[in-house]
Length: 83
Image 1 (cartoon, rainbow, N blue to C red):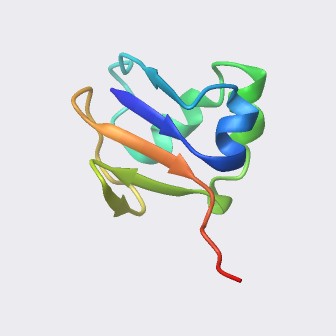
Image 2: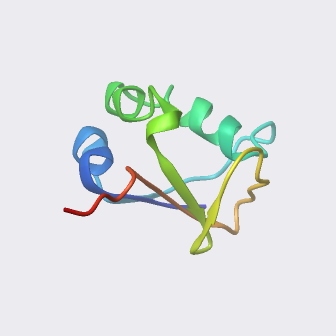
């Protein structure tokens, strides 16, 4: 799986992208976020409040228990605001 991080998510994790192999029990976006938060202090800090994040899988916004696989590209970023 290709992971992309943007804005303060990228800053807290310390990288803009990483390639991972999903554990077999990680099959949804919420499970992915939970698992990722255990990978480092930066991940834990960035992903502590999933309600503050937006997720895109293969360039499409998703919500809820969207299913993910190793072949997916997942982007994680804060909501975009205008001004």
